[in-house]
Length: 124
Image 1 (spheres, rainbow, N blue to C red):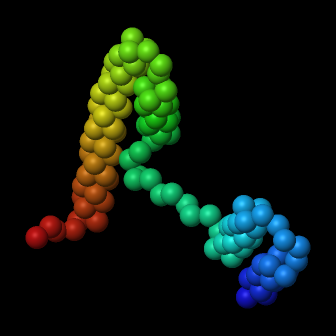
Image 2: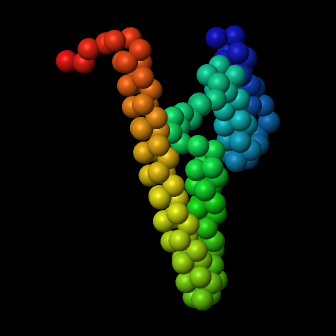
């Protein structure tokens, strides 16, 4: 709570201080709120599915870049070329995601079967 009260004291000082522009006040207020949130709450960690690999994440980023290239293309020919590259990359990405997910499921099934055999657990 001390961190919050110290940050919000800056708001009070801003409002009682010299007459500054609304935009600069907004920037300072936003910065104070964001920094306080990061200090108190921390960053939100994004949890991916267990079967998503680094290679897939790289391909996803590459696909985002291709999509941005489509949106920023200036001529129709550039847009058609970028769209074809994006479509091909999207197909490859979906294919690799599918195979990695199947592999993960099969590996987890094999591990479960191995544990069942070793522990002599009966499945109902």
